[in-house]
Image (tube, rainbow, N blue to C red):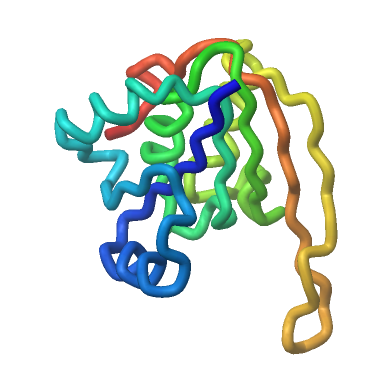
Length: 151
């Protein structure tokens, strides 16, 4: 089995900090915007044949748009594994980020088979109220069709 430890970030400063603090940690590292990939970056990523995607930053805060998530999702093989966390506010009908409808559509259309979804207390706010998130693990069944990706 070949394991590729890969990182993608949109900020060049993140790549500089990584190289300074943890040189050689990743097999591959790209600074790219998944919503506007160059042909060279897209080709490089497609050749990796990824079978798993984890999203480290919580979804729904505009740092990872739904379009970027969808493009990353489409880079992994079918079947493949997907794991992410998302703030509770972004999985309700009042969600303005688009993640609620995207996740519901992926599940309903059989694009993503959600294997586990667990609500957990992420932390306490400064006023002492709990902040809840969902951890989601699923199996990719097929690519997200282009008509569901709003680019």
